[in-house]
Length: 452
Image (tube, rainbow, N blue to C red; front, side):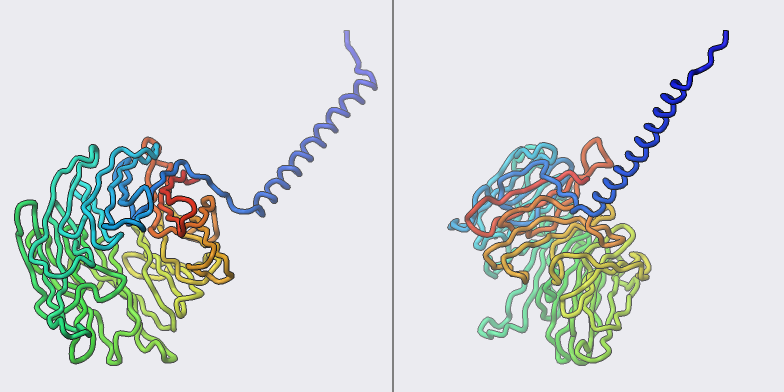
């Protein structure tokens, strides 16, 4: 028997169809409005995974699932001998695994922290101590000798394969207040003895350029020095084999008859990036950013600078070089060059809320992490009544802000953030950094944020 649907049944079915259409249209409209609202909403703000009440004296470092921090669990301002403690923190839980008090220093905050060959090392006035990273037990120590200068600076240059390298520049004529001539000596030591020593063949001061100090990379010591000659000040870089103390090569920065002009230098991996700009006050400034191999001492490439801007290398990835370009150190933008050839790749601006050169940043996985500031004045005033801070993540292709951490009240971020892998989750990363309070209210902390 055939059944014919009634008109009322057709009418009811049509209502269901119409309702479905209206429902889908409304859903699409609501979804579209949500997407538009999300696109125009403030950036994502993430909260800390964990925080530890700890005042960091130097930049923390990581090794595996451990974070090593030299600092105090209370401010060292009232300390008489500026003693400090080495803390080992589990990066997963934020729990302090062990702590060891370090020998005191004559001035605060001048320790160094180095992880090498399965040992965590910390420097002090008279040498270096090494600890087992898992247990915190003392493992080894090095004692400085043959040094006559005061303890006002850290003399450790680096450690490689359990060889510590240290040295200093001693004024030749201490009665001369200008102190333009120095005798510079460097030593390589093991636990038991000094295995080599070296003296610069001509008078010179270690460092010379404020941005770069002696550094050890891949078994090579880069010793920067500044020399006063009849032609003016010159910058020289001596490259030495850490195991033998043998001088491998030297590289002298290009000179300008009117002086060095503006310059900066930084070492990343096996390359020295040296920037010099001459005749900066004239209409046509000339200079270049040079990439110098530590292995060969030869120039890999040079990028010409023909405008009146300052260039400072800020970070290097496995493929690219990140440079800050600014005029008179304000109103700058980032320039990205190819690491192997020096060819221009792209440039972009980031909105920092101020125009000064960012001093604290980390570049990893397509993001640039920079400290942001909120002060009590319209201009950036580092000594103003209010200074709140946070870390903001920018896209390294567009310069757009992607997300930021929660606001850290009355604080300063003095050291570059660390990007650390999460165990068993290679796609997940952590952002770890220290924030120190500026006054007595609150407490300094070490924070960990899971990167979204």
